[in-house]
Length: 341
Ligand code: SAM
Ligand code: SF4
Ligand code: SF4
Image 1 (cartoon, rainbow, N blue to C red):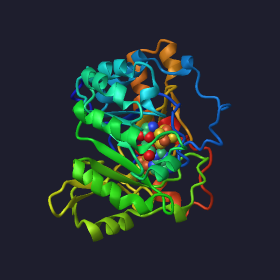
Image 2 (tube, protein in one colour):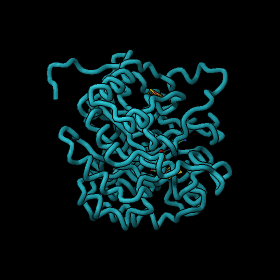
Image 3 (cartoon, rainbow, N blue to C red):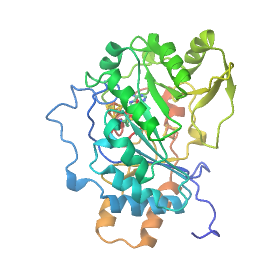
């Protein structure tokens, strides 16, 4: 790595630290807030296999991201465990020098089979999404595709495989699962899992998002604090997006992702790679930079580096900070199941 080069920054002086790699646009769940079944039914055209970046292509790109400052790689999707032989990609990425954190976000359904191979391949840890411990509520939030029990088995398999510390992501939707929040927090506290409560976001174009279904991070914290007292703690690192708290009784920590009510664009250091090789500089992006075409046309390393540098250098995204002033929601945003959370 060339140590003499100045750190890459975007137009708002934000460095590149964190890359989310989406490996598939397919999913075995149909969470209505992400992939409502009425839009993503059996006739929906998912990406054909030949359009997906190959593992060698992803790894080549990841080396550039790390060279340009990224220290954290997260595999996501769609459901990343549906990508065949994902552990082979994990092994390739874990061999890149400079990757401080290699994580994967999953709905957990396939973890009972996959956890040992992922660990063996060099994955550091997993984040498992679980919106409620109430089976009826959870089924409603995953489109009827999984029981709570199945995901808990996945989480336990990850724990046995030492894919730790385990984080649990829960999207909170007022009137849908907010009444089960305390039970989930208590369970995670007892088990030693780090809960991340996510404000329901207006990602994609199909989830029918409404502001009145957003439960603010402040309200989540107040509800939990009333039963299990909390105190705020500092961010772990620059660019951490969660507002972090610890239980006053010493029983661990939890965090809130307040993308809607307390946007954190000013410290957003994330780049996103789509399954077909497009670079997005924002979760709510409408434009992207295609890397697959140059990759398959035999681009040189120098040219590839300059495309990635140029994309980050041009970045001025701050959608969550301007959302409130928009008269109309932004249209034609990339879908969440395509680009990952
Ligand atoms: N399928 C995997 C999973 O569910 O963990 C990985 C991809 S999923 C898109 C990544 C994260 O995005 C999940 O934790 C999910 O709950 C979150 N997510 C999806 N739609 C969301 C929305 N509308 N608002 C907030 N978070 C959302
Ligand atoms: Fe699938 Fe994850 Fe989206 Fe749910 S949130 S539909 S599990 S990609
Ligand atoms: Fe980052 Fe875009 Fe989210 Fe702002 S809205 S925090 S720029 S991904």
